[in-house]
Structures are given as structure tokens and as C-alpha cells.
Length: 272
Image (cartoon, rainbow, N blue to C red; front, side, top):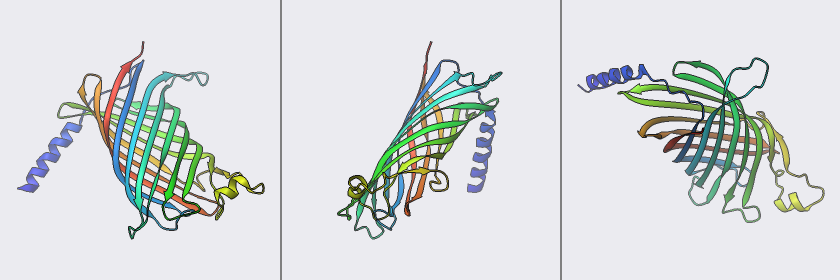
């Protein structure tokens, strides 16, 4: 009996997905999205401790998308999407034995222009470069002389965004998936065993700025969201955010893996 109910539900759900609904962004349209989320964090910073710290992560995200026309070359008639994103997150973490706690988090800002490479009905694919800036840190309550590690980076990222629209039970649904990874840039990191006093006060110390690329900073961020209308010009937005940041600089290993369930709202405006 249960298997029949599940089979019937699957058939009805699959049939509803076949009803596509086109929802392209129009000229002058601006989409602003606000989302908050809660999830899990796994942080390792060998400058502070050789052990993984796990705990809860809280995240807030703001996004803005605007279609635009750019002439980047002769005969270029492609559509572009101006995209900016601001993300803040904070993690409350502790070691495996739960006798040492810490904090981690930061603020990330992305801005760039994505080109429309493919559009077919209700499906669109965008890709392009994004400027990415991050400032944050990790704190460990056990360390006395060096209790915290500063995290600074500026990179050029590659970003891919896919959009798809369909109808489920006659309700229009907008699906948005994007993934990005850093290509190259600069980041701040002390030497192994070097205190911040030695880093900034001693004349023979390096400045702590190093070049980063996928070889020493293999990282990935992705976001999957669904939007359904609730009021005119407003949509309920929910989905999954996964940030997998890691690096190995000056023999110091670092990673920050966060996975969050996100929920919020998207508002649509039109500029004349």
C-alpha cells in the first residue's frame, strides 16, 4: 500500500515537472535576494591547532542580479548578467573531546558580469569572471600567545550559473544553481611558527602576502535554490549552500567546510 502511494506521488510529481514555465529576466529587471541559514561547520587551522573543530554555522546572504548589454567585441550580441553577492557567516566550534571551543567566520564580497552562453526555452546558462574579496578569522581559546588567525584574500574566480523554470502543481518554480572556484590572487598568511609580532614588527620578516592559485588554494563554493511566488513581486526562496574552502600556505593547512539550509525572499524591481 505504501509503495503504491509513493509510486503515485512520484508519477504526479514527475508529470508536474514536465510543465515548463519560461521566466527570463526582462530589461530593467532587478532581483534582490535575502537569505539566512543554519548548518554545520568543520574547521581546521594548523597555525592554531592540528585538530579539526566542528560545530554550528550561521550564514546571511544578499544577492543582486540585473540583465545588461555590453559590447565587448565586434559582433558580440550576447546577453550579460550583472551579479553581486555579499555573504557573512559565523561558526561556533569545538574539538572532538568538547573541552576547547573556538570561533570562525568572515565576510565575503563577489562582483562580476556573467555572459549568457546558452538559452533554450526555460533553461539558461551563464558563466564569467568574478572579483572576490574575503576578510575573516579563526579564534581558539586555548592558544595564549597566538589565539587567532587572520584570514584575508583577494582572488579572481570563475563562476557558472544555471537557471531553470518549471511548473509544479500549476505553481511556477524558479531553480537557480551556481558554482565558483578561485583561479588566482593573493592571500595573507604567517610563516609556520611565526607570531604576528614577528610578522609585523621584525624587519627581516616577510609581509605575509603570498600568491594563491588552485595548487595551494583548491576551493569550491556552490548554491542551489528554489523560488516560488508568494506575493506580487516577492518570492519565497530556499535551498542549500555549500562552501568548501581550503589552502596550504607556508606549510600551514587550513580548511573551512560549511553546509547550510537557507531560506529567505527574492524581490523583483524594475528600473526605467
